[in-house]
Amino acid sequence: MPRVLSVAEVRNALYWAAGGPDSAGEGAPSSALFGTLFHQVFRALTGPEGEANLVRPLERADATAAAWRDALIEHTYAWHVAPALVHHQSRLKDRANEVLQFWEAVQHLCGWLAEVMWEQRGTGRPVAEARESVFIHNEEDASFELSDPSWSDSVLVQGRIDAVLRQPSTSTDCLVELKTGRGAPEADLAQALMYRMLRPQQGSQAHVAVVGFGPQPKEHRFDAAQTADAESALRALVGRLADVAPGVGGSNRGTTPQATTSPSVASGGYNELRTALADAFDEFRVALTIEEEPLVGPTFLRFFATPGQGVRMGPLRSLADSVWTRILTEQPPHVSISRGRVTIDVQRPDRQTVRWSDIRSQLPARTPEGSSRFPVGVAVDGTLAWADFANPEHSHFLAAGTAGSGKSEWLRATIASLLATNDPTTLRLVLIDPKRTAFGAFEGADCLWRPVVYPSDTDVRGVLDELITEMEKRYRRLAEARVQDLAGYNAAGSERLARIVCLCDEYADLLADRKTRRDVELRIGRLASKSRAAGIHLVFATQKPSRDIVQGVIDANLMARVALKVNKKSDSQIIISHPGAAALLGRGDLLFRAVGDPVRLQSPLATAADLRGLLP
Image (cartoon, rainbow, N blue to C red; front, side, top):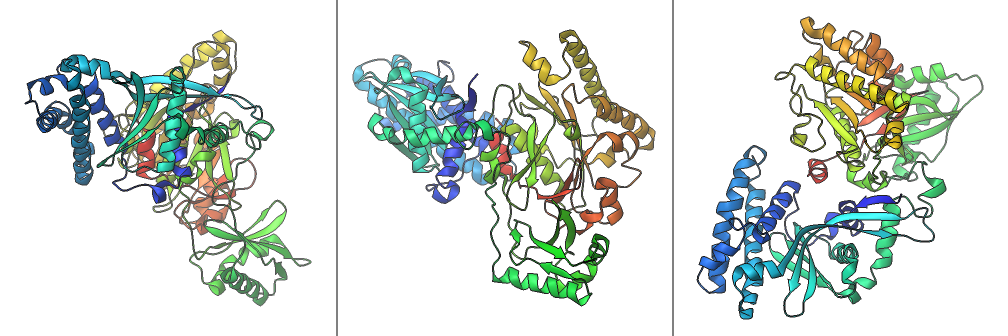
């Protein structure tokens, strides 16, 4: 079976390959919600529904181009825009500027449609007949397959063409891609080629138009000659995204990809820090040779050191606080052993942000089987550190971190990565939000197994009981199919089960009520000890990693741990059996431990725009 990519994935990669916001044209940034509403308006106006489409207002208007435009704007506001704004009013608070930009774009859309229809008056056909002959398809599903002798597999690109317009004078089809917000011209050209490939039956006859409303209208038309030169670049991009191109897929599949935040060598300022560090250890009479060039990660510098004869790791670690007073960073250095070498991590004076959008292209390509893998964070050498729910050691996660540590942001980046590599047929989420602030962006999303759970409104015990019932039902199916786990079940038959991931942003809050605490713990313990093979996983986070919160079955079965900055070494010890989380830098700086020693990583930051772009 070929690898599968969606047009949306390719389109997003095209945008960023062209330079992202830095190369975008004029206009306002796009918004997922308003983009969806805009397409709904277009679909209704050009579709066959007589009450909602453009036929009646144009038939009733005076026979002038301006009157047609004004009539269509009035009709569109009354029938489509006003009801949509009322329906989404809770999501539109504090977004007045976006609402105005959306309405301006809709007015320009009405003007464009009125102009298209006005040109048909010369044919003598009634408005209804002209609409039917011009707007021959709306949101047509299509696909095309690409292959290359050097690829490890072929790639099936699936997508939806916004509209197909028939040009009456030439009977030539024009494939139309509607865009809201800014766009990059280079990306528009590659998109035109992609849409031509989605409808190969038209051959070289079809034109492609990318019509942008940002909110000012702008139209780019491309013919076959203009798109020919872009085909090789598009093929290369598809091969890379699908993980089938040489050096990406094939024998290299499964290796850790390089992140865009690749390490750099030391500058003069870093050398000064190295000298201060070496002098501090020398002051305390510790024989330690520190290499000149550290690894430069986004958050911290990693210096490699060679201890002198007789120097033990215990004294080195215990000197961290004393050395701290000499190097004057916000947090003490972190001394550990990595691959047999002594490492000293020191806060980077010019810390960088790792954006989730920068690592998105390195996520696994979306396939019909979905993906159970996600990046926990970016290592100091620029590589992504991966977890896989299908592996026993990664089946359930417990994360801890104080306010400002980046705990909620890590949860949202995890969700973003899972959504980017799955669809509702392969992944369902159960989101428990005691604080009511962590998962509001996902309300109503197709990926939810049930609505977002607010414990003040819904008894969490009932939600956990639903998951237990689903788990037992799945185990009966596994037994009937004579397979051992979810992957085996999905591979064995035509029916497929989606992986379910339950995330909770403040686990300790579920235990606050002494009357229900025992019931909640028993249910979580039952899921944690048994649900992995059934494809149900827990990702719980807490600000309070005390022994009375992390204990018993919970401690034993939520084996994968993410420790962000905590207040006390004892809290760090409870979470990862290591005191180092107390010296982390906050804002996504974390220690990940599943098997063996903890690994220090930086969580990527998934913005609200990133999340909106992943939701329908």
